[in-house]
Image (tube, rainbow, N blue to C red; front, side, top):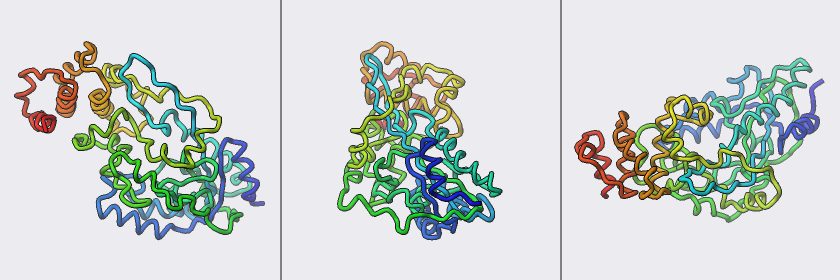
Length: 361
């Protein structure tokens, strides 16, 4: 016998999910068209994820041939924000990366897949992958409404959730008859609150301006957004922090914040490759190259540190001699911001001359 969505929801809530819904596994044709449009217009900013292969990510049958249903779950990751440590130059980490929330989501989704498999059906868990447009699946499954920030907002939890699904060949009938009503109404606080204006219209993000994406991209960090990066070492929560349903949610009791909410920048810049990847390797890092963590740390250091601090000056000076031209170039920008003198050996380095001009502008 096929488990009902009510039975699966009970299991999911007991496993730690905040919402569970079901829908059919038909392709998301309209979403595919929109993804392709945004990619063609360059709004993806080189992002892969569901942009890499829209035909695959919008068709659950590509993940599981013969798929009939999606059982979608949301895991609420909202935590009490810890106080930043004093006396250190630190970078802020977005709440969705304080710990591995997706591991807990997958574990809970496996609790939904188990009874389906026990009933003789195939069921696979898909979360944080290129195989499924999770927000579209959550919307169709009645988990929440699609907010102007482009996030799904779950009633009672807001957008502070990670999403995933069980794709199965079982026919799990949904128990909702209409999508969750739009709760944004005329509110535009996420559009106004984005530090770089990356939400160019309701629900549409220009990834080329989105700080959460830019810290994950390769190459030089765009000069025009370096100051706007502020203290963000990884991710950006601004559009979620200003969202009224999220502010209501944040006033309720929650679990304590995780240790990785703040990162010691000088520690990052002193660590070797192995140590960095052991600590932060679950983040999205271009080419799995820890030098991109160092790049971000240098920029944040420029925005938050005291240039008169001997340890800061020594760190910047060391990176002005980095064998990596990208890091040397970013160190030049950091030095200019912190009034750290540039030695002659740096000002004649052809790899950083452009960076010097950018710093002077």
